[in-house]
Image (cartoon, helix red, strand yellow):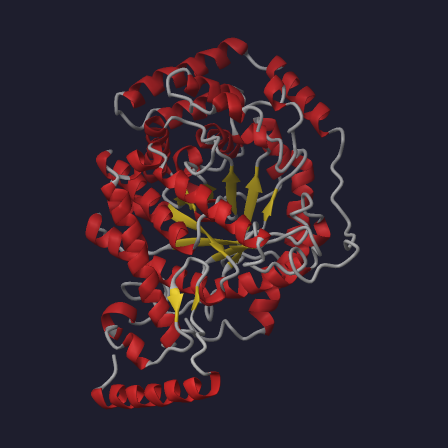
Length: 567
């Protein structure tokens, strides 16, 4: 990367520097580590990146291996998408928050917006509000939306062919089916829909209450992808959840490595199902956590793009650039926000967001400063949007693509992150592949160890958290907390019961039986039947919970189910 003269001069200057610090600091060791444990030197020079090939390893934005950006011109042409997560109470409550964020300037690509809608715990796990297991959790930490009528209350009046609707729930197929049925009832063709399903039926393996048995979960996830590739080509069908893996104990290296391992497992299944990699890879996206170790997470992001481009081209034979792009949504760190001195979280999140922007993310969600206390208020939710808007309009960081490229430290650490990511993928392969590694508890053990180490470092003062274990104040700063509507559960239960009374029960039952029969075909390895059957059940006014129950009659429900019901 450098000519011989530059390297000789660099070595001479480095030796002079070493002599100077030894004289001044008398041999004191200034070595450090990243939060992932990568050893760091106090300073980096051309000598540290002399083996990096600029054309092969870095190149220009928008060219393989896409380390600098997916696009030749990025933020200068189109800044990242604002994707605040929202959802609480009844559908109309969530609609109020959607409208407030729209009014506050939430923006997507070219006039469209992205509505990042999160479901409550019962909805996440395929449980209707009128079921006993839902008691105490209805409309909390997400919206209670389980019927066609509920979707209408939340989305009527919104141009769903123009805007992106992101469905954040674990039980993907039933809720997606309801949304498609709702859209078609409004006259919107399914092929014109835009948005995301998380597809966490498989990719939420990191959770202790993982919903489906692993192999059947992978079949269901592949069924969703198969349907989208054949019917909704603009739909982003799968979200690989790096943010949640981070929240569960992964450092930067393991967030990247485990996500890439998950994505490979999904892609292997899709290829085995006969899908073209150039078709299905374009719908796989990654939700990436940006955390406190500023440079490490920027370098993780750059290395991640490079590794994914290599995997898609070399392992799957992708030829389209879009199939090799790392499609990203950054969710800045939640676990590093604390309830002690909560206004400090605004500062933390702003730095996380700056790191995400310098990484070249394509979409961003910033948790509100009061999330360690409860659901964000409208005021705090809008404030997170303001962080993004200030970054775009006031800091000047969107004027140049990948402005950190060429930094000795950034390029060295990016290369090191790439090497560490490759090691993790090899460890997964050596354990028999992703599915076997997951089922054997290999991956969960790493996450558990990461959680324990993080807390131990805080308790012992090895990791400083301002306001928690250092610089405490005598009195906690009081902030305005969100106050939910106490009538949400009662109303949601009544609506669900009334919805079931008004339908043609024989027609609903027949459609649900169709879901069961379609699942039998899926168990035999035949794709393309379950999602259409779920949509027909939704059009026959089955609820999300009822469709989920029909799936469970054939597909194996996870071993943690009884524990999961207690959330």
